[in-house]
Length: 331
Ligand code: AMP
Image (cartoon, rainbow, N blue to C red):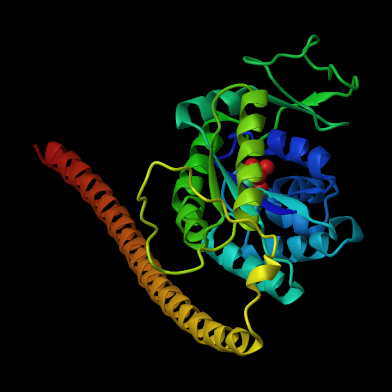
């Protein structure tokens, strides 16, 4: 099972990833955790990432992509993985799709955990993580018995340096701008499941379980045999098609060949349509990105002129003061 968890910081991705890890016996791959480990170990990558993380911004894509590539190639990820906090923008999502396509291991499902922004702030400001076992507590909603100690293993509890109001606010804005568009991206691919992330941990787990169960049953559902809409002519119960082959209705070999000949044509048409839709989507995306770049450079220009104007006003004021002084002396 290959899963992606998306959701704002503090939406509970980490907590749910831990439950999924146990359920499917696959590793949780959190780019945030990998980056924090690199920061703690003071590796060159960690030193580079620290300032960006403390500012609540996104670490450059190539760094994160390199980490992901290395991590999912490890033997423990052979049967699947849960990506937590990755991808964080469209570029990462596209790079991930390419990477998994070359490995022949596409994503099975994307779970998007939705939580109100006000609640997120409260969750993160109080968030405490055990340095030994990774258990999560919250000083407001789920406090540990002893302030600084993990209830489960006795390890020390740690409050993340980027879990302060100012950085959280910036991280939420970064999420809105860069990560939320992933919802449409995965929805178009048909593998997005939106999960209401409010309620108890167990309630959210249940919602995830039922989404994944639904995914499995929709995978084994048979496609309709004909394109014609099914008309309900009576109140008789619907006939349920099963996958069991009815030997009395075996299609003669000639007919089988004909239908097999139609399939590639239909498939090709669908492929062309998908490719066209994707190309259109990419074009729209590019033009939006260009627009964004233009707006950003305009904003920079405005900020520069504003600074210049302020400097000029200060200069004029100083000049005025000097002139006033001179005038006073002349009197
Ligand atoms: P998290 O623990 O997922 O909230 O991540 C903490 C910080 O690590 C984020 O605020 C980013 O600075 C950085 N980070 C984590 N994952 C990514 C990613 N996929 N892309 C870029 N930066 C990331």
